[in-house]
Image (cartoon, rainbow, N blue to C red):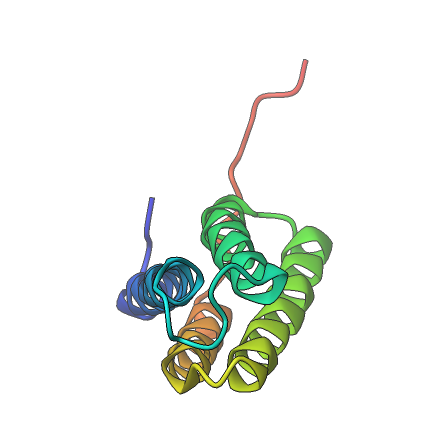
Length: 121
C-alpha cells in the first residue's frame, strides 16, 4: 500500500526506468545493425532491468529500517551499473532512463517508513 505521493511518484519513476531500460536493451539485443545484436551485455542489461523492477516492489514492502537501507543501497548500485552499461553499449536512452530511476529512488527514500504492526503471541 502506498502511503504518500512521494512514494507513489518514486515507485512509478523506478518502474518506468526499469521498463524503458528493458525495452531498449531487448530491442538492441534482438535488432540487427544496432552494434550490440546478440551480445551478452545487452542481454545482461535487460535481465538487470527486470531485477530492478523486482527490487522496487520489494523496497516498497520493506518496513524495517536496516532492511530498507540495504535495499536502497542495492538499488542505487544497480541503477549506476545499468546506466554505465547502457553508456558502454551506446544506448544512451538506457542511461537517461536510469537517471530518471535515480530521481525516483530519491523520492522513494524521502517517504516515511510505516511499520506494519503484527500481533505477537
